[in-house]
Amino acid sequence: MMDPQTPSDDALVDLRELARRDARMQGRRALAAMPRLAAALAEAPGERQAQWSLHGFVQVLPGGGSQPMAELEVRAVLALQCQRCLRTVEVPVDEHALFRLVDVEPELSMDELEAQDEALCATAPVDLHALVEDQLILALPLVPMHASCAPPAAPDASVDTSVDTSPFAVLQRLRPR
Image (tube, rainbow, N blue to C red; front, side, top):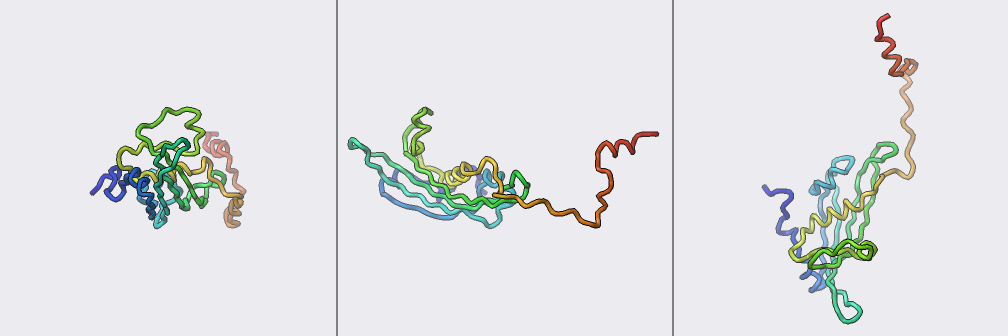
């Protein structure tokens, strides 16, 4: 049995080679196979899958240089817990990320934060499954909510709601007289 943190050979991709060949890859990945993402879901992912596509290319820079790049697109529908009504809300994700393939991660500067692409250290093969899972995690909304939540179900008429439900009323009944 393979360690879930160790990528399988089919998940390792040489992004620089992909960019050099101007190649494309695409596929599907079961949400259940993404343990970090599955922990954030409101319910077991079951048969749900994420669809992904990856395109490597070389971008010609002004002044004559070139930069290897990778473009990742990920699509999925995630079942999250609505923070307003606590029911499950279906959140569609259509994430697009552009990576500048670098040898060394650059210092985090204001220019780096404002860049249209992200620096990705690609000196060794990259775990594609982890990259897809990372993009889905980054796409999670901070506060998942329905556009409008349905009011809670009406109380059952057969249940006696006339009983005082105050916690202090319960304590009052327990107090010796």
